[in-house]
Amino acid sequence: MGSARCSSLPLPLLLPVLLLLLLGPRGRVSGQLRSPPRWPVPYRRFDYRPKTDPYCQARYTFCPTGSAIPVMREEDVIEVYRLQAPVWEFKYGDLLGHLKIMHDAVGFKSSLTGKNYTMEWYELFQLGNCTFPHLRPGMDAPFWCNQGAACFYEGIDDAHWKANGTLVLVTTISGTMFNEMAQWVKYDNETGIYYETWTVQASPDKKSTVWFDSYECSKFILRTYQKLADLGAVFKKIQTNYTSVILFSGEPIYLGNETSIFGPQGNKTLAAAIRDFYNPFKPHQSVREFFVDLFKIIDHVILKHQFYLFYNLEYWFLPMKSPYLKIVYEEVPLPVGSKASFGV
Image (tube, rainbow, N blue to C red; front, side, top):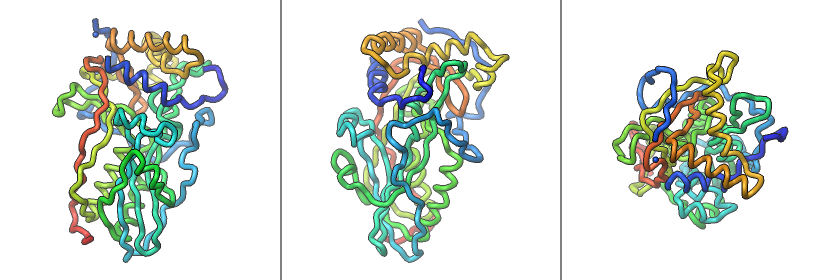
């Protein structure tokens, strides 16, 4: 991309891609024979979080007012709120809400102190950088700025969540349960470090095979709710919907990791194909460049049925098929726990 540092891929870059994919001879690709233990491919966890490369820069600072999770008194009674608003609501208002592209968080209110808190999980360098890589001069392999992490801070911005979204009480927990949840959040945040935008499945049928599951803000909230339920929280019977961006493909083909594809003994033909696929998703400098790259994306995904997925630091080929992509906003019920419940 020419510059010494990457700039965050702007969200508007993603919108033409999403709309484009909603608009059929299939190309062939050779890959390594590998049968995963099960579908979907399990999300990989790590022993620690690596330092981010200074090349990765965010347009908006990650978690600017973040703070440590406080230790609550055992006898405290804490209200838990479901928070949801359109992605980038602070900049675009309800624009992405019309497409049901929503961001999720969870809020807490202490009855003893009266203080409110917000907890969420999102990209360190914005959505575009987690979804597509940068092609840096002098580097054969695509370069990813795709870490995600939890953010905890004091206060709940009522106007942000209520204006175009949701702020609703879902359960009440004890201070002890909150503290146990905080320990789990620390583990989850240190071991689940990469943001995964796409869910990939065989067809729009709800019972179809899921090849890959996403790992983003809503999945963190669902894991948090489940942890609270397992600790004894009893959730209200209300409908809760979440956004998923789904790619549709035949059975994926495993291609390899960065070393096996782009290393000295790598597959130069495959490496060139992957770089060629990702190149049109770069930030655009002119209107003409934008439309040229838009045509290339149509050619790859719609006409040639090709998509290269980066998941668990490995590359997979997706033989795309109609309807190619769908944004769904579907109900995921609040969980039921496995322990004796805490009375509200």
